[in-house]
Length: 252
Ligand SMILES: C[S@@+](CC[C@H](N)C(=O)[O-])C[C@H]1O[C@@H](n2cnc3c(N)ncnc32)[C@H](O)[C@@H]1O
Image (cartoon, rainbow, N blue to C red; front, side, top):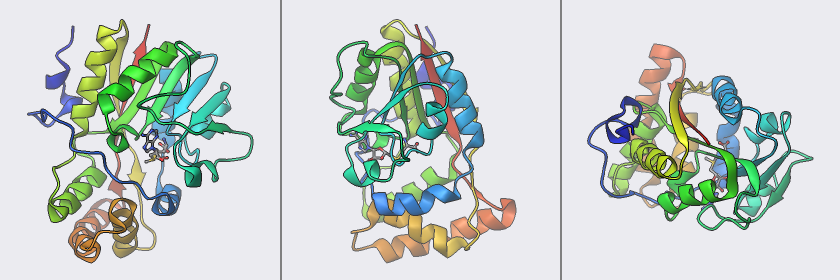
């Protein structure tokens, strides 16, 4: 068995002992953020991890950025709690209302269960992973942030201003890997690069990003002011901020 708590893609050590969330999610700001992503490498790694799956349930599929690519390979059902997100799915994608903590599906209903950038928004991410394993016949694919992901660093600056604990996606990945291994899956982690350029400049990205989680927070302006210079530095150095991901591929 792998010691996932010491795996470099689950870092930095030490992994917290409890979940920091759930984080809040604003569908309107998400729709402004999506066109800025360059998710080609992430999509390629997800398709690789799904392999020859004959059908896929995409839980928290959102507005379908990833779902569309998966749907070109195999039939997909999206399970998504947000009506605002479901309303913006591309034509031809079937969606149902539901939450990852209690999926409205029987055991082994789909060949593969997929959840990308969802666990941090759930009430109980460990229960969520158990649910993905329950509804899957052969594969589970989970995507969360890499240890040095810029957007998670920005979220943590906002969290400090809000006075809430820091995010740590290694906590989600290590716990997911342990749960899936115990359930008989073989697990692999792969890192992928995701760039987020901001043609409209640092302020535009800071404004969208802070509103994505803290749109109703009284300290929203302070959050934008705190993350804008960090974004400006990364844009000046690299032309983008990163949203580098870890793809967890589990098969049985
Ligand atoms: C950051 S978006 C990711 C969307 C898509 N998976 C992607 O990677 O492009 C997070 C999605 O998780 C959904 N979500 C939030 N809480 C959820 C829950 N408890 N169960 C399932 N999905 C949830 C949100 O509505 C949103 O669509």
